[in-house]
Image (cartoon, rainbow, N blue to C red; front, side):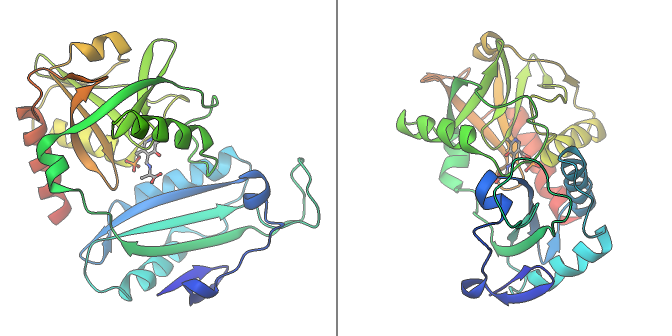
Length: 279
Ligand code: PDD
């Protein structure tokens, strides 16, 4: 398969980037993961808007507009036929002659995008529900930027795996903000709750969609902070992302969430989400 790199479509195994690239040296870049169903990017405008917000936050000018990205992504998707795919798109500040913390004035960004078959949700895991642990959030204060710098997320994710869990929920000042690669929802007495947008979490495209679907379907919801303690008495916990969609969480720190089974509100939301992918 071909990927897109700096204006060209080239075979994946031939794509090369300079070791002087600031993405390589500093993690100086941002990214997006965009699902595509039946050959069409899902919620593309929302993802590209967020990309531009991330770029603005790291003082970069968008190198391409939405229309240009759209054409590139469609071309990448075409080579794969109609199976469900995920697009990975990354922009780094580019290669400069020397390693310099200050942002150089003259530097060409590095643009990369590729499509690959989506990591399908494991039906067995969907049926059983995920297992999560809570961990102290050691990330920085700008988690709203979709930065490629993901060391803290990687360490938390691997600690979760080590402890036999599938995901870690990150807690800062007693508040559960999001997962290492997902947003967080809790259901309590019929109310669907997710933390409000802030610099402590990524404004997830799936998160926004779930709230939209709740509104359309008349499901009561609120954007309110969730303490780590409150999570323990949740009726349901879900995590969301572009690739995981809406996943039920049935174990928290080794204990069952409510009766330990995916809940009825999750089932309802999962069905709404599936229907929405078709429209
Ligand atoms: N991660 N929070 C974090 C820290 C994330 O990395 C992600 C997504 C989300 C969910 O956002 P969205 O609904 O827009 O996918 C929340 C992507 C999928 C990844 O890094 O692979």
